[in-house]
Image (cartoon, rainbow over the protein chains, first blue to last red):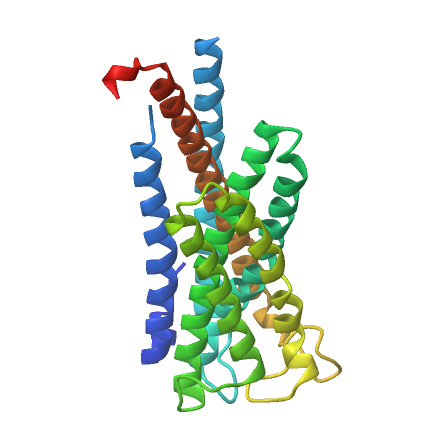
Length: 40
Length: 247
């Protein structure tokens, strides 16, 4: 199974994908940190 | 008793991790389908933003209703059952935060798509304006919760949540009521709406994946808020238990 990365050949498309992953997983990591902080 | 509580917490964490693993697997399949879906005739590869813009926007219309429902329950229970009211309040905070997260991604991906497709970052179109209003309402909800020092913060924010939810149907229907810059609905928008069936896997895998991710972050944020509530209650009790001269 190969992923055709050439379909990402648009600058704004790449930015949009980066926004999605950064926002979502950034928030996920922040939650994980809060989870550890609030542990008794 | 303590042993039972820690066993229950460990069991919930185990299920949470399993859910997270499953979610990441679904998102990976969604990513693969988003990359391999056929190229669109007019926009080329740029249309692939849709596979992320669509689920985030749809889900940012769903989470505010959870926030509104939890706020109503908070107002209903606050006089009769304190524990239930606190749970509802924790759920309201969690759902508002996830709403802002999903709406931020919806806005950002929409603006990037607009810049490439229309040549502009922003226009005061009906959908964009009502969507920005939605984002601002939930950001103000979170700011109110963060900076309000009054004892009635939960009540005031619950009332705000009920009013904020009024924007959701207006925003959702805006592309049906007013034909401005934003395209007509892709699904359920009449005879000419829809996409090629070969693009369905990318749409549905991503919709399911981001729904699962939303449920995961919502559950985790709720659990964190419940911990904070218990910590606050313990701190208050400890303060009351201290001798007067020690304060």
